[in-house]
Length: 243
Image: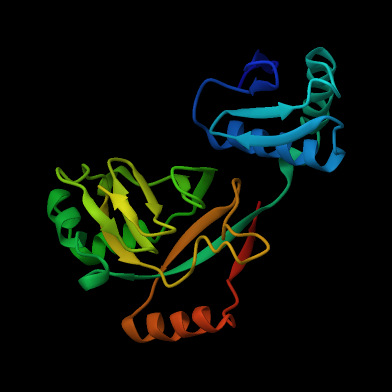
């Protein structure tokens, strides 16, 4: 993490705030805390925010606030965070997942590549809390960190033209969830009945940057039960607090 933020102009109406030069939970937590502080403060002239792994892109209206004044405001907010908000608790969103079979056609490939059994792959994949570093690629797509290298597997040589929504997949040292049906080249381990993106909800994305995801292995009967509740709008997503 940098001793002090770096401010880089991005055109005439945006400012990049870099907080570090590496991918780490601590740097990323500060990025999201700074974004929340800007939102809470309702800084006059700020029109949008885009957090990433280690920086925050701040869009502003230059007719309302000058870049120099915005930088001073952001610097003050960052300083106030160093003592307090960075220690706040995060959410852990439990994601029920049916591994293998038709839902996870590449589970055996991942197991064979790493000289593991399919049960061992499931146990390893579902035993970690994955930090949502940022959202992107497609609406609601979470970029996750924290996957064990024991199950790392290369991408498919030929991507699929359509990967079903809810597919839980991995590629190299990363894992993720496809919120909507899109093309994709990751190895599919399973599928969750949860909707990671729904434009009809007040908050379309199921998870937010700074949240954690914990995959929970379920069987076919549980998958059908949860999916029915999700479709009916009665399912309560299970969320825990994490220090």
